[in-house]
Length: 474
Ligand code: B12
Ligand code: SF4
Image (tube, rainbow, N blue to C red; front, side, top):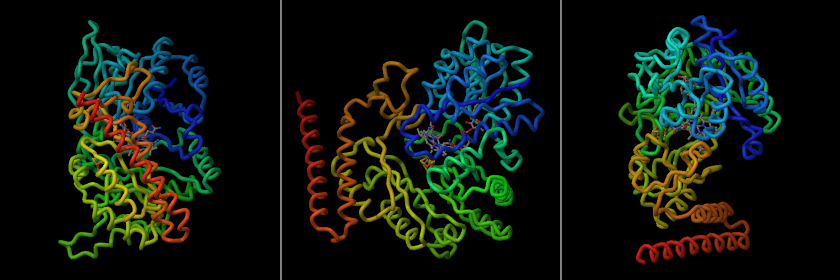
């Protein structure tokens, strides 16, 4: 008999897109919670849905009842809602947490949850589980970090819970609670190398307007280099991955930490290839300390970094400033070049459709990608995540998706913004022009065809803009 069964709503079998990509990672948050609660003496089970079928989870839920904890995020809402309804009908007491449910507490409570946990889950669950056992789900007044309905159905929002100050005090994620070898094998089977994820810090102090800070606020807390290196050594020993992924928000945010971490890895004779994400402005060594600007890139290369993803977002400084991104186009171009020089592949995230973006800004982005010359780039169309400044800014123009339970925050319609087709054209334009640029004179016939395709896409977008401005005038 366990005190809590933890799960999430992500089933790879229901995600045809990911079945093509096949780069799954487990949800670290649940594994952190599992390790923490076990250490505190609770009985914990984890049902990892990633490789399971929905019926298998249903069968597990039918076996008994108790407290079920479900991780929520933007993408899994519809799946989680189904799980909540089923669990509630089977008599489970249901607790939800993660980055999404705190943005929609009433909705999640209506969908079947008894309690919504906001922020970090470890200490809140430690207090909540005994409170649920003695007081039931409607008298949780005073349990910091929770939202619930009292016996009259009134929404009660308890005070937020202070964040965990010392991340080293946490046990490492309970990877043994799930079949992590299966993740490593899937990676190896599809990509020739197995990968495991870990984090070195929690939270990001930057304030990009579209980014969700629902869990960690604007704090930034780091683990010690020693504790992180010890975890890496254990992962390396236990799972033998070919690489790891540091799933931090901004891996190179703290340079002195990075250098100390490198020293610690050297001391242990540990060099595990890795991939991670960062911001371009945090790639430059500190000029005030008289440091070589390329020191960060060199350190990463020495540590085994083979690819770094940079949130570049736009090639238009006007748009970057509107996002309050705090990065310049030149910084991104510089970082891309220096990383390349150090043998590190550059991946670039780009975002279309931010407030006020015009065809000229898109042209600036195309130009920027050519200049930066990343090895790979991914585009998304911006979407307002509830709780972000961007959401508040566009709220007067938002149309809610008709059925909340089946939608995600990606389905909000921002009135006045061009349709999806417009951004498909932007993708075509970008890809064709960048490919032509990469040919570098090697195949003039192909380059001319690509440039013609890019020009057609741009013209189609301009025609759509003209059409839309006529509609506004009418
Ligand atoms: C790594 C990562 C990914 C990875 C891998 C995900 C994985 N399986 O690990 C990839 C690249 C695949 C990814 C994709 C996406 N991601 Co992502 N991702 C992250 C990132 C950077 C780290 C996640 C992590 O490991 N965190 C560390 C753990 C410890 O934190 P945690 O998960 O939040 O868990 C704590 C609490 O939430 C809580 N908790 C968690 N579960 C539960 C359960 C219960 C019952 C309770 C009580 C509490 C609780 O307690 C935990 C411990 O304190 C986060 C940002 C961040 N720093 O968290 C974004 C983030 C989660 N991603 C986000 C988004 C938007 C996406 C995408 C939708 C992007 C896209 N456009 O496609 C996709 C969705 C993919 C999917 N299938 O779910 C948003 C989510 C916003 C939202 N409202 O849901 C975040 C918050 C980024 C942001 N700042 O905007 N992501
Ligand atoms: S987008 Fe990245 S840098 Fe900006 S606030 Fe979010 S996590 Fe921080």
